[in-house]
Length: 388
Image (cartoon, rainbow, N blue to C red; front, side, top):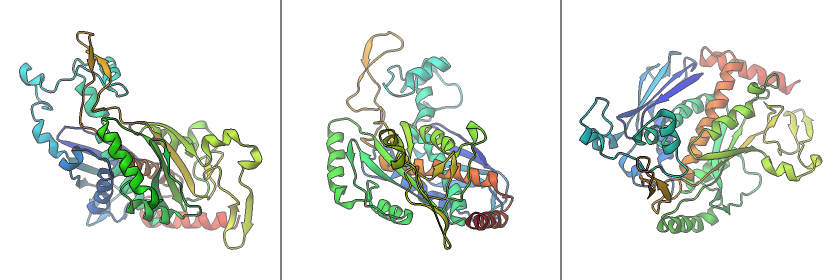
């Protein structure tokens, strides 16, 4: 499976083309729209979410409610584009119109300045438009299709926020993936501990009043993943490495860890390795899951536990100092629409990219021209592993 996305934040539409989805997968626009709505939700979202109500249009690769095996094309209209017709015009326009919303004051922490240097832009809007987190709309759309595949294979995925701007959220022990999913989706801030909800909302309100932003840590968990996805034979075949690359490719994400993660550097080996057990009903299991479901770059049958850290959004309503790229004089950075935090929405994006990587790995390992063939291949593999 492979895909490409295209489109700008204030352009006419966002597009994705996906190739390699098995034929016969039930797929409706509503399956995708549900996740697009989740991406736009969450406490602390800003004005853009009041303008857009993302709805996908499927224009290829699906017939009569099922995929055909051909490339799938997805479109999402940017309603806000109607206010930007001159500014984002594809055709050449008058110089006086080109200067509207022109950006010469780059924002610290954003792609504005470096993108302008790399591509030799005299208007940093060209950097801003494609580097905007609006691009993640299509990664969520692609991820929704990937999750349809995972659902057919009895693989569950969920995300929740575990740190909000330095405030750690206590998570009850022993929660299943479905319980995490249910609790987090009932929360406006995507936490499983409802006792912390109002405290965190009040904190977000305070940050907004201050014109500032906060980041945090998001955890994605995946249950029911077959043993043996990924490989140790080459560095670029390790599945945890592929997932790490996908997670840090999300706008504003700066790090990723699995299981105990960086805490493993503070523990003894006996406190980190997961003892192997066996029983008739389940086959091989582990006494613990400190390694987050991975051994040697491969899935070991335990739930995958993946955490990503998101930095604070770089656009501030009390902007930091910058430099005008024409005069080299100090100026305050450009202000675009922003949110005090986008952690709940970023969790949906993280969940989507993780699902996409896992689905891709499954389609690469197992025969998958059509859905039935794929399901039979995965079931056969699970039976083999259980009786190994």
